[in-house]
Image (cartoon, rainbow, N blue to C red; front, side, top):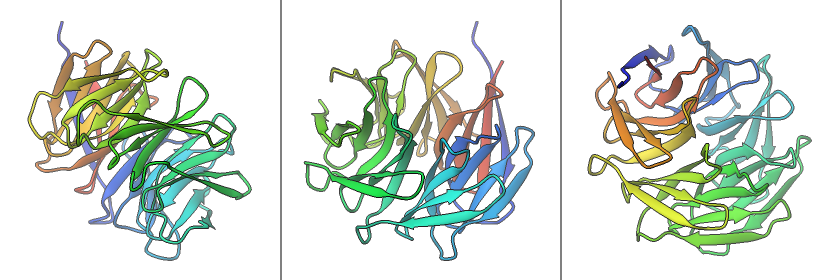
Length: 297
């Protein structure tokens, strides 16, 4: 029996903020970053939105993740720092050692530190809960690292958007790179699937990729040319879900490679970040100033 998608969109009160990344907070609400505004947003499962002031400068945050300290950690790319936001709205910032580093992806590592990518500095960063920062250079020049996630093998896995590789870094800083079979694929989002493999999107190659912890890669072409997949997340249904910003849809792929696409309500909404919520729905950020929710029935 085929399932029907029910999509709801909630407009962000402050106009033109560019919602970008989404995550589930320690309070079970959905928190989101804004690429074009100095604030972090929170939306409850019933759609109530609150906005919290970010850093003093116009920082434009990209991605965010809950830390082991019950705070949210985020990447203010223009401010060249790592930000921290408590559940009560207190903000702090930790300056990066490398100027103009371009912090982008961020996740909690197996060592309870935060690990992040620096797309301009071509490094992977690590920050402890008290703000101590270490940086590790990526072997490939101009790799433009994007998303990062803790893998099932206790290492961190990240996408190298311009080097056309998937990277792996241990908590000791040892880096291995896996070239993609298809040239100019442009990997961006990456997530751990229910099959304990790493799944990633190819924003230029128009495919969804899968890599095992030992480096075996499979690629699955999307249904629509130039769909521009961006972010990917494991869903509550043993499949993975991803955003297609050019196709203006939310995509679903099973571990067997079967793909379904669900169109959004708002034209040219530009969906980016996506996460499975505690309510069993998929929540996503639309750069056209909406937070979206997709539920199946």
